[in-house]
Amino acid sequence: MSGLPVDLRPHDDRDTLLLLDCARASIEPETAERIRARVEAGPNWDRLVALAQRHRLAPLLYAHLSRTCADAVPAPVLEFLREYSQKNSAFVLLLTGQLVRLLKTLEANGITAVAFKGPALALTLYGNVARRQFGDLDILVRPRDVAESARAIEAAGFEPLVPVRPAMRAQLLRHAYVQMFHSTGSRTLVELHWDIAEPHWAIRFDADAMWRRLETLALPGASARVPAAEDLLLLLCIHNVRHDADSLEGLCSIAALVRGTPDLDWDRVWRQAEDMRCRRILEFGLLLAEGLFDVPLPHAAAVPLSRSGALLAMARTAARHLVADAAPPRTWRRQVSFQMRLKDRRADRARYCGRILMSTPEDWAMLRLPRSLAFAYPLVRVLRLARK
Image 1 (tube, rainbow, N blue to C red):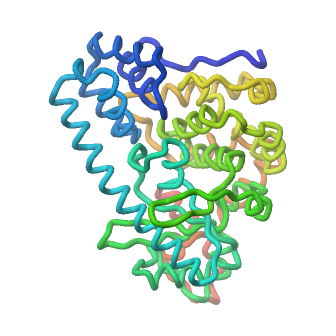
Image 2: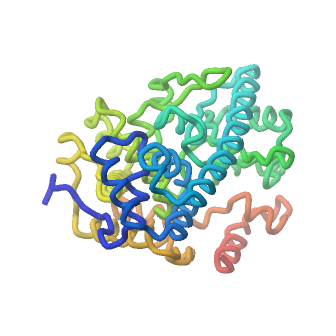
Image 3: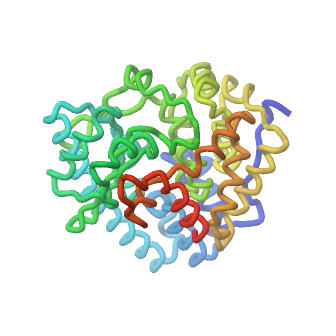
């Protein structure tokens, strides 16, 4: 079965098919004709718009409907999508300005920072920050720069979402991969990363190698360092699985990156996935991108893709949940089961189980223990997860 395309599109669901056709950077003539035909067939507009909002694809839906068949879309629907897109545009432009300010602040403090997701991803995939709907800023720094970066971000007017006591700083670097900051005045959430996933994922992230391959992206008023396309693809696939593959927008980003980067070095991608122990995560993301968004995978990507029965079954289940009117409840037990099945090896699953009870800043905030009792935080985590 290796090499054969996978079709996960819900062919009896006209609303979702229309959304999937619009969820891309550009529209080819054949796709434009298909979009117009679906619009003229009369979708359930209320359901379509709700689905687009839920999956953060309304800006793309509006952009392509207004260009290909605005005359065939009911005026109230088109007007709602136009206003929605305008509000998103204003908000993401505000976030982009905040990102530029923070990158300049970090640079002034001698800190090299990487912008990924947020405005950087929007410009990389679509050439326009307003085509993506996002609500936070992601900045990656080296672990040695976390403390200084946090101080610089706080000096720029942001507060930690979960305050971390000085005594817990060392544990923060070992037990977490991100610290969040917020600014109530601008509704901006900043995620300061020093790794790409929680420690229990046991992903072997070679930050130094990624840093050597960084590229430069022009932002309004500044330039940003961003991951090379091969690194970005793996980051997006990992992010997709960390969030239980619950967002069409996340998969749309994977599809847009593959479609828009014909010279992607697939040998390096597969080699990195093996080294990082996230091959199944990569395969899962590519299966969903190919199957839902009709992305033609090049030979170098399609042949190594295993398309195992278990992985295909997971992809089909995920696809059904994505297009359902109501997403299934996200329970901790279901999340752990899903993520465990996407680990490459038994040893990786054992590490996942062994480290998932490592305490986090959320656990520290739930119960403030004196330093002499900090060893008890794993029990606090168990209680918090049991409630969750």
